[in-house]
Amino acid sequence: MSTASATPGRHDGTATRLTPRQKRALRREAEAAPWEGPHRRYDILKEGAIALMVVVILVAVLAILFSSPDVPPVTLQAWSSAQPIGFTQIALSELEGTSTSATYGPPYNHGSGSVQDIYGVSIQRAIGVTDPINPAKDFVLDPLGTVSGQPALKAALARYGSADQPTRRSWDQAYGRALSAAKMVNSQLVVPPGNYGPVGTMLTSFLSMARSGGLDAQLVAHSAFYTTNYTNPLLFIGDSAVAQPSSYWNKIVTAQKMQSHQWGMMNETGSWPGQPWLWLYVMWYQVPPMSTSSNGDVEVIAIMTILSLGLVFVPFIPGIRDLPRWIPVHRLVWKDYYRTYGSTSNGHPGGAAAAPIESTTTGVDN
Image 1: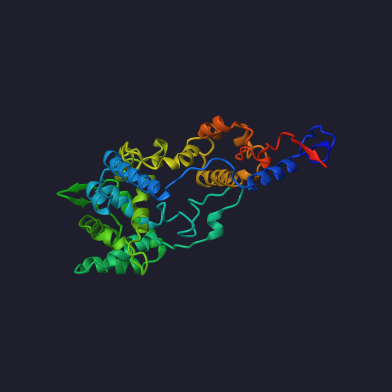
Image 2 (image 1 turned 120 degrees about the horizontal axis):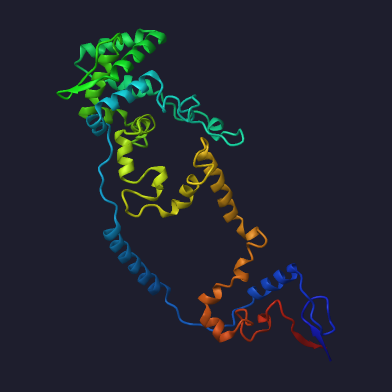
């Protein structure tokens, strides 16, 4: 009889250093062997029921302690009532096509004001206009066309619609200059006289419509599937955030700590817990060059895409995939097991297949 090594390639009783492929093969062989360790009765239904009850109680308690306050929604009615002149200025920018929405670009229109790219590649342009929006028509003219019982407004809309583009532009610009000196008198918008054609009548009626709540209903789109599409009112309100730093919307956002420099995506409202899983996205907006770049959104998306792919492919990245073996945190979790069976059992105490793949075993060769 002679002794032989269990490691491949040697039969003289001495140890041979295994290659990574051989180690993986032996590890798979050991893991495929029947379990020879201890057994314990385990009622999974009982444990599941207990876990469910604990989670339900925790959710109820935490919802009471840390629930989000019921903040009223921001509406066009509230905005037009709080800042009627500022609201009318944004309405004029929608009408003359100078607002953020009007110049945005895909997916709303063919503008370029908010188109972002990275190394000359623009996902927005590649996808194209999928949700066409014409702010002048969709935000102002069409809602005004639904108002009944106002012959002066109807005549103003007809006159504006029949005028050529240069004439409309001159009216819009003239009203904009007059609007800078506008005042509220007895809850009515008073604008100095000027050569702004029907625009004054149109926007005065538009302000009244918004303050009555009618504009909110008109801008919410209804379809066969989604009955409440708030894209139009959200874009309209959002236009004020860019054009007017002291706008109604910006004041609310700042008070609720929702501005980007306040890590706004971290909060639902105020200081209440919000979406902590978004912290990594928000963090990149605080770091140059994303913090000052006009392409910040697409740059953050690119970074997060790369990080997400890295997470997906962790099992295939040499070095990183071996960290659990190099930093054996699992031994802390299963400390009782390793205290009882040591580090050489590999889950199969006493069995021949349980020998660690890094070591050498000897046997009898007949």
